[in-house]
Image (cartoon, rainbow, N blue to C red):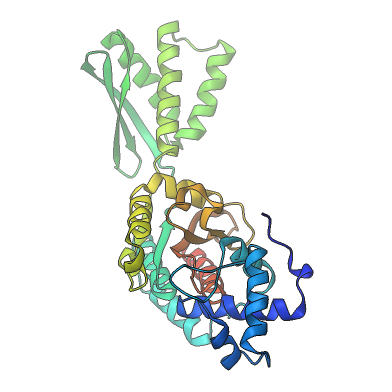
Length: 346
C-alpha cells in the first residue's frame, strides 16, 4: 500500500509522526504512546496518541515491532520524513574547521582520500566510503608478449613509469603480428591517455588508411576494447569504520549486519550504487529497499559527488549504516566534506 503524502495528514498526525521518527532516530528504539504523552508537548492522553499511532501504522508510515508496544518508522515513512519534514543541522564552525584541518594535513591525495573515509565514519557513527577518481594515465608504450596457448601479456607503460599488465586472448596470432601491433599502438599513444589514442586509432582504422593487415586491425580493435573496459570496471573504493556497524542494537539483528558486511565486501557493487549519485546536484539518500544492493540488510546510504576546482565530478563519497542514521546531522556533514575534499583535488 502506498503511503499518503504529508498534506493528507492532519496537523496532529504530522506532529506525532515527526516525534516518533525523531525519537527513533535519536535512540534507535521504538517510541511508545506513554513516552510521547510525557515528553512530546502534545497535551493529549496516551489513548488519543495510540489512536493516531494506529492510523499512521495503517497508512504504512509506522510499524510496531512484535517485541515492543512502541512504533518506529517504515522505510517509506523515513523517506517522507527526510524529503518533507527533516530540519538539517548545518555543521558548526568548529566542526567545519576540524574537517578542513584533518584534510589539509593529510599529505598526498591518496592519503587525503583515506582520511576522508575515516572522517565520514567518525561523523556518522557508521561506515565511511570514498570512491577514488578514475585516473587516466598518459602512456608511452604498449608491448604484447606472447604467453602461449592463444594468450598474450599486454604491458602498458605510463609516462610516470607505472606499469600495468593485462592478459588478452590473441588466438593463433604470430609473434611478428604482435610486434607490429605493439609498434602501431605505441606510435599513437605517446603522451596521450588510452581513450584519447583509441578514438584516433578507431577513426584511422575505419577510414581504411591504416597499413595494417586484417588480422592486425582486428587485434588492435580487440585490445583497445578489452583495455578500455577493464579500466572502466575497476573502481577503487575505500571503506572505513565497518566496526561501527556492530553496535549494541546490531547485536539483536546479526543476520542483517552479516548481510551488510557481505555487501560491503562486494566493492564493485557498492561503487555501482555510488555511481548513481555522480550526476546529483546535491547529496542523495538511499533508504533500505530503495536500492537492491542493501535491501536485505535494511541499510541506508548517504552519498554526495565531489568535484575538482573546475566543477567536474571526479568521485563520490558517502556513509552507510542502519536506517536509523541521524540524517539531519549526517547529510550536511557529507555535503561539506565533499566540498572540502574537492578543494584539494585541484
